[in-house]
Length: 314
Image (tube, rainbow, N blue to C red; front, side, top):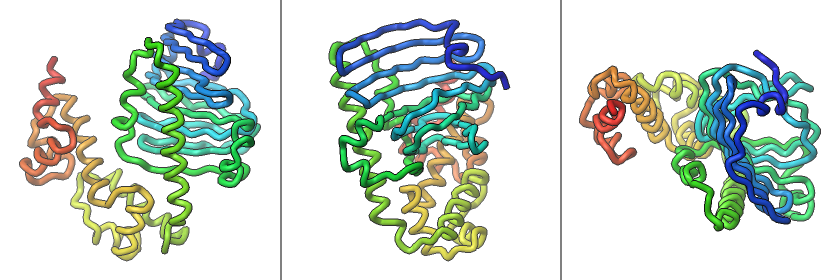
């Protein structure tokens, strides 16, 4: 992979679409289109020491992007689409952030790079709270310790944050909008963390959590198979009651809800190719009955499978 500094990556093809500055607010909207990336990015300082980045990036060529060294800060990263990969140069550890994951990291003096892979389309939100803000708000010092790291799974993040990516950002109200959305998102994420901490995954030890995560991986890789609770329970060697309750605690969805969601998301991908009939797609994603497939699909997407194919024809 080609190694690039931030300045090297952004020096060609950059267009500053709009900029607004005041003492406690900054908004920059930029597009960057060069041989490596096709990027739209919105950067904002919504309050002193609170920063928001909204990133929509099509990666044209694989490259490594060195990131700036960070002072102590809390970063909340929300992945709506694609898979973000980072490399820690001190430990040589690779971190992966997947679609529908929310990560919280409280770190300092980290030297790291983004590993950008050709063909990836990344959409994510990153909120940064600097040390000064954290120290002035006692809640954070009680909640986080050095090198705190946590990931949460939340289904359908793309729909939840759809408006942030599709707003024009030409209004004089953007300052209020961005600040409110940022603070609302921080509250939403921290309340989820606090709730999980209180629950502390009741009744689950570390081995149980590993087995439940393995069950999720089996669903991700074999969604087209006839997957049942009994099947998963046997595969991961965990009793069915603990598997069902633990899965819901960890991923905020039942096993059946998660399986259905994966199948329908894959169905959209296959339908957009416009190579297969609706019946073929329903079988490819694990439905033996086309009627059941169409019913589940219309409930989730408010349209029929054939409507997706029609759009792809346009």
